[in-house]
Image 1 (cartoon, chains in turn green, brown):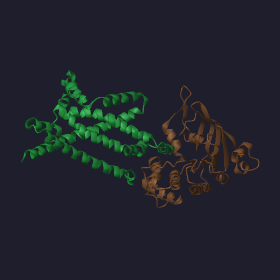
Image 2 (image 1 turned 30 degrees about the vertical axis):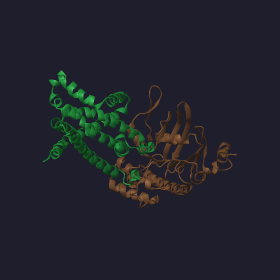
Image 3 (image 1 turned 45 degrees about the vertical axis):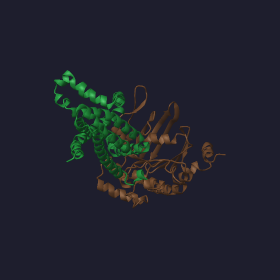
Image 4 (image 1 turned 120 degrees about the vertical axis):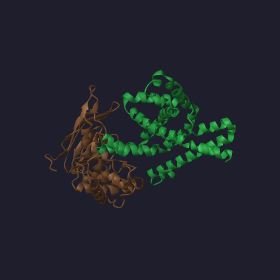
Length: 225
Length: 257
């Protein structure tokens, strides 16, 4: 096989690493974001949630990844504690940093959607005596999902691309493999172009999935008109 | 269900201010089973606020509310600020009532049918199949049979309001609260909603209606209440309120010179 063929194959073999990091971070960040939004509803926890968002949204993801991998993972108690098996893995460190960082963005997306729910629909739920959890499950959550989806999808696309930063701490994801190949072949442009094409494929797939979800939530298609 | 007392609503001394401005300055109101009470008044008179205090969408600053034998769980903190004493009891109270809003407030992510069965199934624990059966009957009653699978935004305002009324009827409430139910409708749609409400009144539903529809109030009410500046200025049966013995203030409200 020629150089481009083997390189493509090598890059594709790294896709599972990128996808795993993306899916795990998306899940983690979404869960943390939901907790952050819940915290913002109560006065006692509001400050902590705001501080979290301020810090993680206001500092570069690359720095956060470095801090986890080179900083926290090097601390004595971590190094010799029970968490070491996790922190010695660069993939875990990248996941942790991405979860924290992206949770801040997603929390803001969810908060915006929460504020956009028409007050009258909440009042209608209150007026018929729905309890807090029923209201959340039946009215608030589905509406937040629908209102947040476009911005949330945007966030997810950003996250796929952000996973490439993990290569800076030795994770062999698509970008990591590309750099490896370049290191011994010196064919910078064509290898990076191939890697970019692989990312394009992944974001295209994600966009297609998101569009399907958006359609299923909006059966009349008013959003597309 | 047999009620020991026919009293469905007893509100006493309801006051409410917003940011230091007194909107309600002590309102008492009673309703017996089957009463249709219309509440009239100029804009800013406090009539909608009063209605919203009854199911505690607004928290009254003071006063007591009893609906179908259940006392509203109102309490005050040490600064005298009103608060809910018991959220469960509040939901139980609200579950005895139903509200029809000016802007319909159908849940936009649910079909017409799901809107109607939501409260019976998820608040009252009615089995779904039974709730669906009843919902179809109610939709037919409000003239919306065949729309069960539609989405709220596919409907006209009048249709949405009729669905909202079916939703309100679905739990067989002791007390129905109507907050300017026709004010957001095109003139030609007002009638279809008023006719429906007239039919409900004829069935002996206990209804409290904030409205600007004077003819409707005159024809349908058992009592007409005139609210002005946060107090009840005058109250009486329509024959009195729309007759020569009405208070001059109310007459001036009806036909401003």
